[in-house]
Image: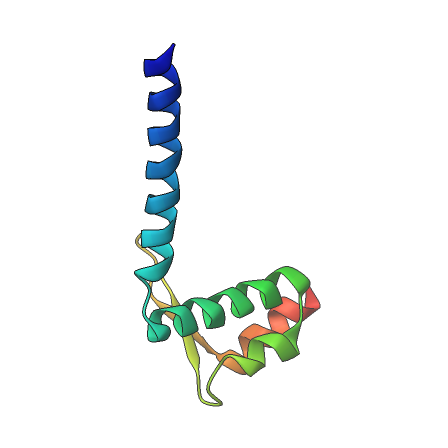
Length: 86
């Protein structure tokens, strides 16, 4: 019984340390980049063109490629408008 309790506590401590290490491993730049990406995904989910525009440079271009199809591109403004209209 003592072994089981000890093992349980060690697993809990290891879990807490792992989470703490993971959170502290991000630099300020990494946190900023993740925040911008999250805001973009939130804008897409909300169909909010203004939120998307807020995280893109004015001359942003978005490119995509599907299978063997040619690469296509559109402006960030066009992407924001398309997302907002769906």
